Image 1 (cartoon, rainbow, N blue to C red):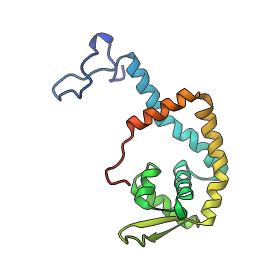
Image 2 (cartoon, rainbow, N blue to C red):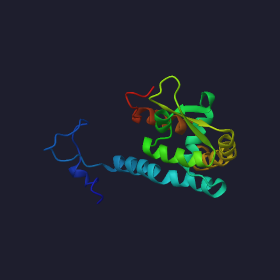
Image 3 (cartoon, rainbow, N blue to C red):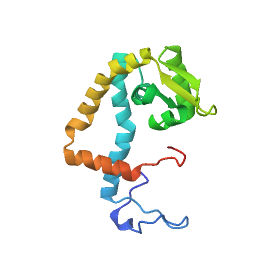
Length: 173
């Protein structure tokens, strides 16, 4: 057993968080299937999305997401904290990636003129060319691995589930 599943006779309990001294609510078969599906997506899908980007364009999925979000932003620039959130990475991870992108001439960093406490990342024309060439590869992979195998109801269910599970920092905005 995985530590999360137990025989059906041991399942049960309320939907509320159990007290520390209460026994855990083991997963029933449906919950286990849902959890296994979700964790498989979370752990396996990023590598499958990244592989074609690395092979065809020499960039990681995270680099692509950073460049893509910058390409869609007004003036092709965003505050570093906002960009880290959009790309689903930590600020330190983003800083390392932005440094590499700067070295390649894809991004420049400047102080935010509206508030010098913040740093802006701005996509250069060379960076835009990279994301513009990589976008069809990424789109083809997203369609092939995810969207084309789902009907409209499945796609709407994913949106609904993602909205229910979304965690947004209080200071994001």
